[in-house]
Amino acid sequence: MNLAENKFGKISRISITAGVDKDKTVIEDLSFTAPYKVMSPFPRPDGGISVMPLCASAGIMEGDRQEFSFHIKKDAKLEMLSQSFEKIHKMKEGNAFRHIEAQVDAGGCFSYYPQPVIPYKDSAFDSHMEIYLEDVSSRLFLMEVITCGRSASQERFAYRRFASRVEIYRNNRLIYLDNTCYEPEKMPMEGLGFYEGFTHMANIFLSRHAEKMQDAIWDILDKEPEIDGGVTRLSGGDLAVRILGRRSQKLEQIAEKIKEVFETGITD
Image (tube, rainbow, N blue to C red):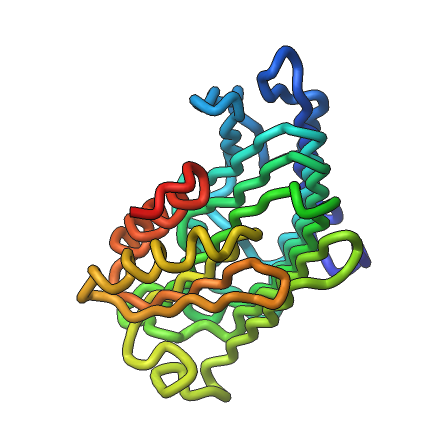
């Protein structure tokens, strides 16, 4: 990455390695740079941990460059959360960029579960995520909720650009690619194939065991009259879920139910 693109002259970084000690997931290595800090992990009932970065900034600003790196070692279970909605602030001419790379070893489980993204008027943001699953025992739950912006402030699809590229590999073979790129001035954001009159979109990826989860997820979606959504079974046995709605809270509630299916295997 070219530092000349960043007016602050630095890249903001978070790097976390999670391993196992006495059947409990622990942080083996942690580093971060401003404006980030990382809270002490929260233990989970399954022996895993939840980690929440804290950011001293009010949100993503023009010129920001961020790099996040995660390594989930054999049998470790790491859940990444966020402290608040991710606000992408107004920008004059430039943009902001984030790169995320995660390695999930055999038997490991990685859940990336941030709160919704709010792109402000005239903002421009690009994100690139690469996730490498060692084998079929490496598990992944990935979610992203993209809002239309600050609709209450008459900023419905008023941002310049929002791009999110997600690549997921298993055994070094590409199993999932989502290349979302929205430029509202050039695209019919309210139309068919886009938001279709809704204001919020959730994209969820769940690894493997589709036959055990697909019916349960359809049942969750069918019981929610406020939303529209679907479940796609991928060739490798994974699932991709897309949900359209009008409230962040509702999409988060549904995502939590889907995550419970993923974590516990409950299908009724």
